[in-house]
Length: 332
Image 1: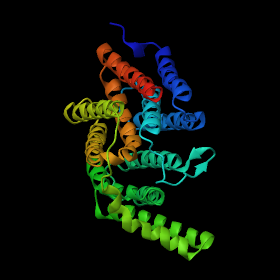
Image 2 (image 1 turned 120 degrees about the horizontal axis):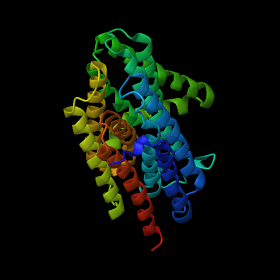
Image 3 (image 1 turned 135 degrees about the vertical axis):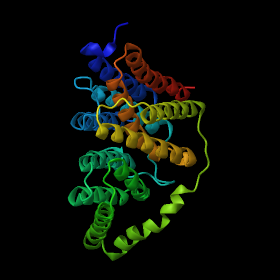
Image 4 (image 1 turned 30 degrees about the vertical axis):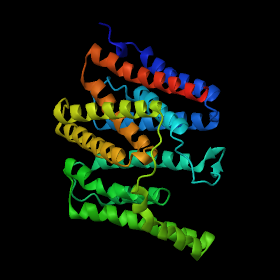
């Protein structure tokens, strides 16, 4: 059986396939091309970061790292499906504020995804380092900064002990460095708002953190059948690959094995939270897409099998088909 990734042009075909749903979405969904293309371009950046993390930390086999095209296609199709079907970028009943013809909440979610990847990239470098002050203050700064846009991102603090434990760098000093970074970022935001917009604006934004738990209160669920199919498709994939990451010792080093376990555990936890808070599913899809991209790419790299590679291609093709077929509900 021919292994598709043995052909150099397969990577280009995968990226090209990710463009096809965008063309259909522009014609049939009524969503502007600017927002869809912004997701696609941002996905390319995220895909490169995922490829770089896998390459630098040897989470795959040399010259078998195809994370760039796989992640680019997967993330872009998940984001654009969510943008169209889940109406994820909305601001209550008010008209949404737009920046460069893109809803501001779309920018927030893209920044959140970028922040997560920067955290993973930085924390991978703290392997077996019990005192990694500057890198972890940086991770705390990112968490705090993202939380000033999307307050519930502060719950990321619950994930850091898991990450540090798997990277064998869990210590009071490292946890303290993360908390220091978070507090510093929130304080800098408060001071900035104080000088730019006044004390009332700064206080109002700071007090918004007191409502962080309100975000977890479920809303009315009204998903269409295509949205449920999409939810099931992504959930099954993330569960399959997370179990594979936990049970299959395919890594070629202790660090790589621990990193894969860490990504699998995070995938499980975030998927469970997303299922519990399913009425706010749009808040988790970007992060889930990133973690799924890691899992699929690492799995494809380590398992040198034509069947496995065709399975990877089938996953991407399935997302493309689902993205296009779901558009027909907008026509009838």
